[in-house]
Amino acid sequence: MHYTLKESDKDKAEGASGAGALQQKLLESRSIVISGEINQELAQKVITQMILLQSVSNDPIKLYINSQGGHVEAGDTIHDFIKFIRPEVHVIGTGWVASAGITIFLAAKKEHRYSLPNTRFMIHQPLGGVRGQATDIEIEAREIIRMLDRVNKLIADATGQPLEKVKKDTDRNYWMSPAEALDYGIVGKLITHYDELNLD
Image (cartoon, rainbow, N blue to C red; front, side, top):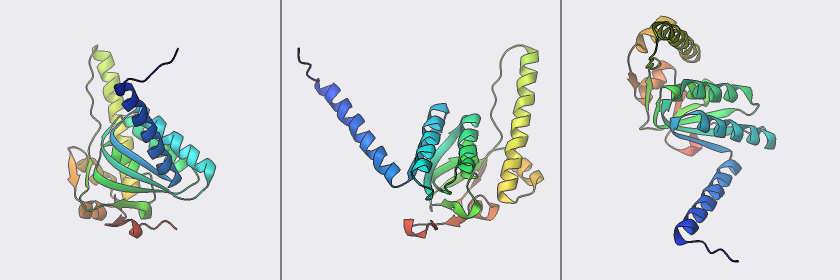
């Protein structure tokens, strides 16, 4: 018995094959792309790629970020792995880098944090929508405060800004242009072209 792919199945198969080939080319160029919402599935994919690239060589890895943020712990996972692996990771912000995306962006050394011209950056406090019994709400509220304190310290340490200023700035959505993010210490260098990356 022979099975013939329907056109829709064939298109899906060819699409999957094309996506796989594209992913292979990205890995060969030691490039990783984070685009869209940050969640556990994306975190697993990104850290798997970083581990794979480390197994090949210790040459620098380029990480392109265009994200509105997402799951705090998923962002923390990627942040920690950027610091954990041996290869230096160079992060390039494009589109927008916000919320948990900032956590990932700041994992790289300052001199390895780049912004393209039209990128927007945003820091804020973690969002929480807790329901349930009063005790559960109290527990979750304490955890959100602890998470906010940790994120604020991370931003302060990575940018050189005073912790009290960071606390004030993250009280609401705090948007920055590339130039403002450079002044703040989030970005290390503004670039317009690939050749401006310092990949030595």
